[in-house]
Image 1: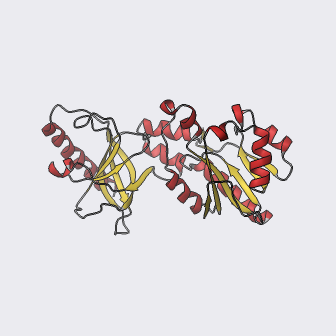
Image 2: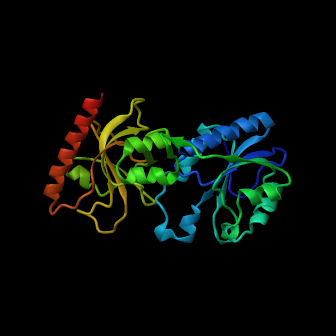
Image 3: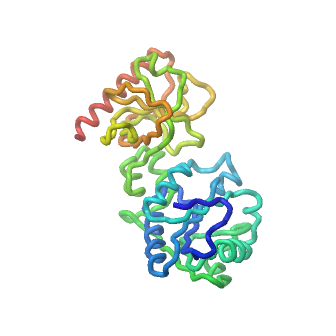
Length: 307
């Protein structure tokens, strides 16, 4: 997949384009990508996605922005999986935020991206003050046609990134997986920690998180990306570790069952299968250790019963 950050695409290859944040690349997004690829094939165009980084709400109100469901890297990997040929990563900054809606159409979509067909959701908004909508897009389009993507529902519920976040926050992992079309997972590169887990008898693979996670607590997990094709099972803690830390930085710590190899620097994906409990603060490290042992036993029991 070709990736560009400067609205620079091959002018000889006109685009079939869809635009959005695509946070989580849930089943609604997947429906859009499938329609994009289908239309591109029918019209002999290049299937392309424009997405934004950071999320516009992170730019305007970072303190109240919603948790990210997927990193940019994970999102790009999913785009490629669903057949996208080109991804335009638009940096959302003051310049882009102040761009008038008509200028976005004429300068970005038509002149720079050579768009010939575009697919957007029924709630699509763009341009300064979010004044641009589907009607304005259709009224000003000169070089491309516009198609509207209607809402996709799962069991009567509208699929959206907000619905996925709410399910994850409630610990309803099975429901979140239905909306996503796959189990929720966090990917990253294993980093060195303070070795507290190893000292307690539970060495962990640590994934530092750059953004606020969409869920927290202790979970039974499967880990992908190790040498074995079969994922490893384990127990993971996702949170700010209130018993031993006070800086409030989130960390994903995973204790892999029956595994003791050096995987520092390895890129892994931690798939959340079942929530065991919320994160808690303990008065002593000994109390924390006893609870970790209980958590590990419960996770093992979960996987044994679901095998």
